Length: 278
Image 1 (cartoon, rainbow, N blue to C red):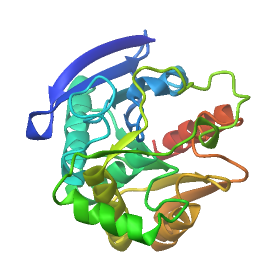
Image 2: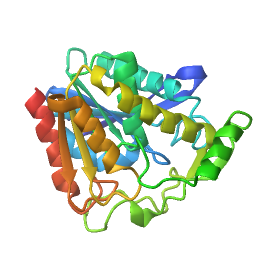
Image 3: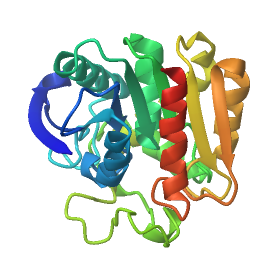
Image 4: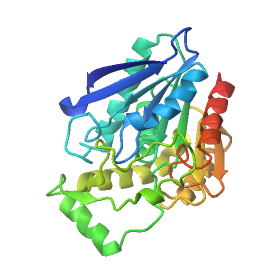
C-alpha cells in the first residue's frame, strides 16, 4: 500500500500531522477518516489500515492536538469543539484527495467521543459513523471530591497535566500477532490535562442527550470486559438510536478491540459493515 504524509492547520492554529494509506493500484471504493484515542497516535492503526486497503478502502488518520507528531502540550485539547472542528478539516482534506468517494468517520475511545460530536454538531458529508469503545462515560467513577476539585481547577489551570492511570494490560489481551504495542512507543503518553478531561466528559453526556439527531447510520462495537470506557453508556446510545445503529457487544473483549485477541475478526466486522453501506 502507498503511504503519504501532510500537515493541515487546525483550530487555533494547531499544526496537525496527517497520514494516508491507499491501494498501490486501482481506485479505492471508499475512504475512512480515523480518529485515535487518548495518549496515542494515528500510526498505531497501521495494521488496521493495511486490512482496509486490502479491501479497497483508503484510510486517512491525523494525530489530534497534543498527540503524536501534532503540536500542543501532551494530552491537551483546546476544547472538544476544536477537536471536532479538526476532525471536520481532516474529512475535507480526505474529500479533496479522494474526490467523489464515500467517506466514513471512525473514532476509537476518546476519538469516538470526538467523532460523534463532530457528526452531531457539524453534520459533515459522511456516509456512516463507526465507534469502537467510545469514551462517553468511563467504566469507573472517579471519586466525587477529586472530580469536583478537578473541574474547579480546570477554570484556572486548564493545561495542568495529570496521569491517565491507564495500564497497558487494561487495553488488550496479548495473542493477536498484528497488535500495536504501546509500551516503548515514544509517541504514546499517559498524560491528560484538566480541560481535556472536563471537555470529553461533558461532551460524552451531551452526545448521549442529543444522539437522536444523528443523520447517518452507525456501527458501534464495545467489549463486555472493557475496564476503561463504559459499555453501559454505549448500550444507552444504541437504545436512543434504534435501527440506525448496528450495535455489537463483544463478549470478553477489552478496550482496544482492534488489538485484542480477536482483532482480526473485529477489523473484518468494520470492513463488512462499510461494504454493506456501499
